[in-house]
Length: 319
Image 1 (cartoon, rainbow, N blue to C red):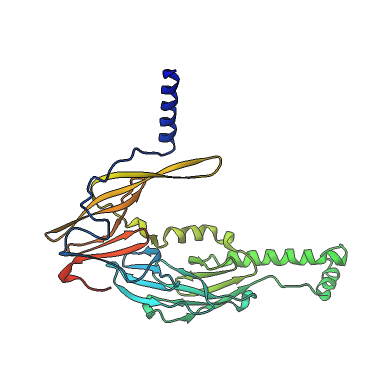
Image 2: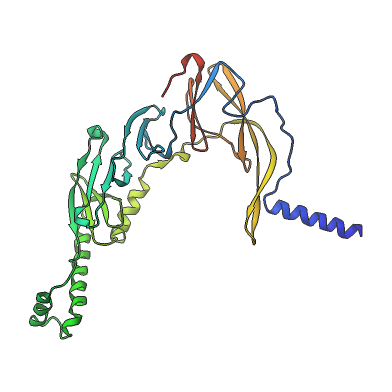
């Protein structure tokens, strides 16, 4: 009887391990506080006064949205240099890799969409873009049908001439879209029907009656390769002097599930000659916090989506 029980126990251990379960421990450093609390009063850890999402960056700036959907532009030290409020009624925005913001005020009719740009070079002043409207006509008249018959374009019945004319116009539209590729630098899609086309010496708002993304697939892929990078590309792991698994949370459905271990990562950070320690809550043995910027007198860290500014107390300043 002992042998089957031993096999059953080994089976349970195997199942737990294969589902991500990890052996739990006691907190190894109960004396160390949980972030953002820490051990050195000469160092200040302050939360940013706002919540940032959709954080991206280029060589010189950080771009993000706040909880209201407004755009926040910061320098690489995370100091705010501009806040762009989202006007009422505006939707669909795109921040290009050079820090130009494109927004659209949509309309049911493509030719009535209005696209604005706000560039860093012009201090983010709102400027309407010249529209370029390409669309198939909305309906076919009897006159169109009769003209097709008289020109011997088809011998089909008049009721079927609509499809013939639409097909010709679709071909014409495809040729017009192809012609727009010449000297095109980038394309920034705002909706399926509206995109910003950036050329060397001009920028226009393309409005069509249907999704035109496939017609610009190659240039769209090149634009995306040069797009702003997400913030996790900046993330660095903090100096850790140990981790602990405190428990395992289970999630799943009737058919499949798994465990996610959680606990603390014990972290040490230094500014000048001062050092502080804290323990950061983590999952799956992660870091808990990530360093986004670091100099000898300032550190910016991220805890999930919250940002914290770390300085010496006598040098602390609000952002």
